[in-house]
Amino acid sequence: MMVHSAAPLALGAFLGRRPGAADGVEEAWAVFASGLRPPYETQACLASALEALARLCPAQAYFAYAADAPGTPLTLRVTRAPSGQPVVGPDYSGLVSGAFLHPVPLDIPAVQAERAGLEGAAGEPFLTLGVTDRVALRAALSPAQRRPAERLLRACSLLAARLRPALELALYRPSSQPASAAGSVSDDATLLALPPGRTLDLICRTGAEALGATEGYLALWRASAPEVLSLSWSLGDVEGLLGACPPELLRPCLSPPRIAGWHLPTLPGTLAERGYSGFVCIPVREGEGGFGALALAQTQTPLAPHSVAGRLARVITAVLGERERAEHLAQGRLETLLGISDLLESCDAHLAGHSAKVARAAEAIAREMGLTPTERDAARLAGRLHDLGMVGVGLELPLRRGALTDAERQRARQHAAIGADLLRTLPAGVVPAEVVLAVLHHHEQWNGRGYPDGLAGEAIPELARILACAEVMVAKMSARSYRGAMDPTTALRFLEEASGTEFDPRVAAAARRVFAGGLV
Image (cartoon, rainbow, N blue to C red; front, top):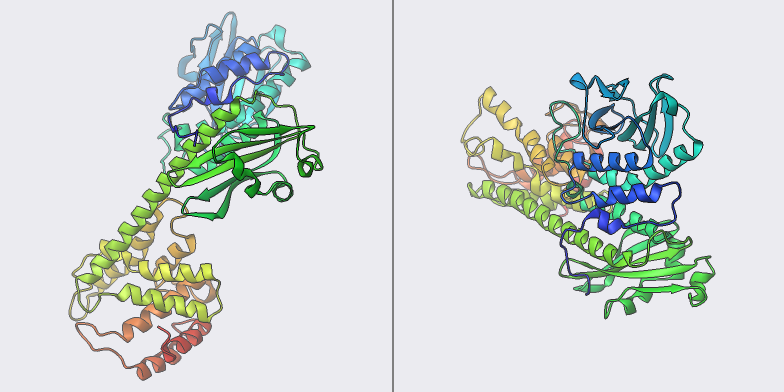
């Protein structure tokens, strides 16, 4: 492939210059884009945004506000004087510029994205520019500027639309990263902190806009299974575009890899009939074993030259490589947790293989209940992980011969919550949320006498109800160091008696068919 490089590429270089804007927006955008450099620190991105606003709108002073999360107040983060130097009053209470003192609030409410307007008293007017739901820029105007031309407000709104994708990236912080003590956006929040899926969406959308495309998709194939296609991103009426240009038609552009474009009158008829004026195919790579193409259907005049397509290919390739590495890392962490569970069981010959048996039983019960393949897979995984939290309890309790004290019993009961907490440390999507809930609640009982939350009836997640029944039945029918295994007849009688009290009757009925029929 011609897009092997995964070296960092300045976002400004990728976005490039976007001709055609009026009233100085293009020049302001160029100032912003040229100032962006990895690792894209939040403060630096906001400072570049103020530089862009200063180029577009002369003022007494400039302020950038950012929120830690959508729906929260915006906090003052960066200031700029006309000279380009940050000048603030005591405790950010005001900014002195020339003969004017502008009271500057530390916090302001959220501002409508991509919208410019005037605020403040006649003698202290502010031009406020909403960029995203988490970013707003302000320019402190002089009294003589209290009525800026409508053309300037329109130009500022256009600038906000240009700034929005980059600042959305710059101000993203994963939910697992704690907020700073002041509750404001972390100083080291960077573009690279974005999960690869979100990065991919923003990059593809920005590229589509730059190339004048309103519809598109990203098709990926694995080298090990080239017949399997995945659509990792789409824009607009993707079904219509897929009908006019199926992914298989893009393969000639992938071997050898080359960026290809068609425009009227040479545009294929199936695409011309849908009203497209052009079509671009951009080959990309996904790690070492994948390849694909970004297909963009153009209906508008491109805002950037087609040379941006090569940059777009490199950026997408880098993001896909990062996504693949993240997936491998997450899978490795899951395998580690599974290994911990197996290690705990291997310490006692009577416990060895317990989780695997519970996994098979839970999957069989789910199948007997008519659940989907995805739900059956979740039941099996929950069975494998249900006792993971015992690592936080210690080995002496599960290996104890004889009864536990009340304090020891309470300690042992913590394993459900500990296991769920361990699973929550994994990146989103590695373990389904319903599996985490099943691990947390697999000791709840239908009558509400279980733990940790004393849930009852259908308030208990369905997967947890299945797991609870599977684990108890496997445990009853397995020998322990302090007792023998319960025979199948007695175990089935226990299951019938516990139906409607300890177990969900529907789950118990399915479990009876499973264990009576020797399906596990």
